[in-house]
Amino acid sequence: MPRVYMDANATTPLLPEVMEAMRPFWMEDFGNASSIHRQGQRARMAVDRARETLARLFNCREAEVVFNSGGTEGDNTALFGLVRPGDHLITTAIEHSAVLRAAERLEDRGAEVTFVPPLANGLIDPGAIRAAIRPHTRLISVMLANNETGVLQPVEEIGKIASEAGAFFHIDAVQGAGKVAFDVRRFGCHLLSISAHKMHGPKGVGGLYVRRGTPLEPLVVGGSHERRQRAGTENVPGIVGLGKAAELAMESIDDGAIEPLAALRDRLEAGILAISGTSVNGACAPRVANTTNIRFEQVEGEALVIALDLKGVAVSGGSACHSGSTEPSHVLMAMGLDKNAARASLRFSLLRTATEADVDHVLRIVPEAVEHLRAIAPVAAGTAG
Image (cartoon, rainbow, N blue to C red; front, top):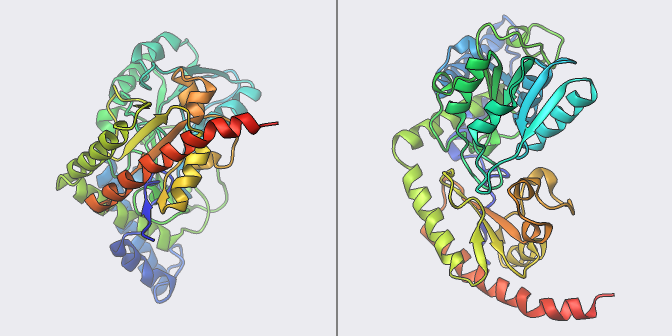
């Protein structure tokens, strides 16, 4: 049975070029990048090359790139590294849990936090951010692209608001990496976090842009690694993989490869919307090219995920970080959906390597699965209890 993977927002496979770039640093070039002998120097050169690549991705100085373990660490570092008791933090109700849980922890420690709700289409209104600002607002943290709906947020406008208010600005760009062009100068942010495994790189490694002069307190302390901004022996194979993935991502954006991906997403979306009782969450907002979040009336989302998986199609009911949770999506609930509608929604997120055949296969499977679940739903309801 053929299998089609449409859960790219959860994770992506390594591209062959990334795997080949990493391979030597597990075996032959295994040195510690902090050692001064030849093996260490080769590792250091590889880390420096990757840092140069991320500086191009971000459009920043090489010294403003910090390597870490991924998006969660980057988000945590941004919030815990800047916000203190008595400070005011502004974030949104649709952020990833790496930001939301950190914000709640800061609130417990004496910081004030405002969670700005989105509009019904999933967009954050910059005016709502402006209205939330107080004299002691220290940090504004807003994601670039939502991991569940793909909705792109107006970060450039929010960056200007933060600048006018004299507040620091952090962007969780994990779901934007490899899908939209980055420019931290244009965004006006002080901090921006990414994760390699969302862009066909390895798991367990990420990057954080830290604008020069930002008084960020390190989350991980110890040695003098990463200019004392993040202690710990560098994950050289992972950093090399992140650098190669970033290089390939920039090439795909420059070569226009994102447009065909958007066309595939749109064809998938149109085909599924031909099924009665379906609609797109976030349809009237700009979105990343690979993502659609579709609501199926009279269908339980988890049951549909399982039914599709049995037929060889991998999709998600929402964030992979909440897999197995019985709670409905906080993102969709914040957008105004009730619990039943939120639970009836699935995310389809295409890999950069998705094909027409993948879409064709999914469009053959989904209508049958939806029809079957709707047909048995009254029976299941009638026999409950």
